[in-house]
Length: 230
Figure 1 (cartoon, one colour):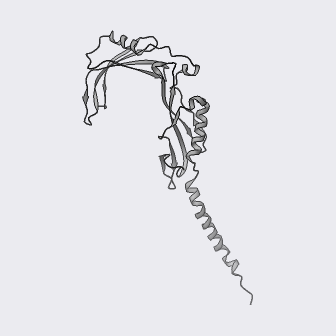
Figure 2 (tube, helix red, strand yellow):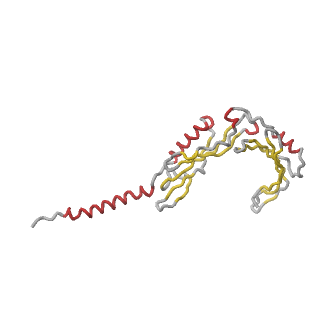
Figure 3 (cartoon, helix red, strand yellow):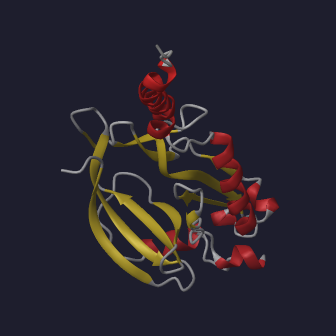
């Protein structure tokens, strides 16, 4: 009688077992997919934004906690999350690091602080798919020039020359910059009523006068509602 070598008989079963083991070991990696740390994303986004703003202006940038990313779970569901943990979850799909920008602008006394929000968006491979939008920064800031605008007191004087509705308190003037039209505009507000909504928050009607901050031309005069939308 010849000896029986069980190894030849067990080889198929061993192959199956090894295959199952590999599937089990690799499953977490497949389900998890590519993950990144917040530090990795911040470092790359910071580099992109710094190259656009310059080191001096970048010093006035702050990370925004509304930064977010999209990921796919092991079950194939797409979800969104903020960077509340140091490492992303699931299979990273895309993400955006957002920033609050507060730039001092001393050469423009009535617009001495340029405020805006921007972000850098990445795809799953951390390639930049959207550059930071800096359109809210006036061109004069980059050239180091003054803004050559009429003052708040001049805007108020122009508004007082108009036939205004009877107001309940002194006029106020606020300067704004439109990133699309590249224009500065004074908004003079004349409060007509002061009421309270169901949450006891202020609401009422007001008269708004929009004045071109360069020429002093009245662009609009309108009655508006402030407070919660009705």
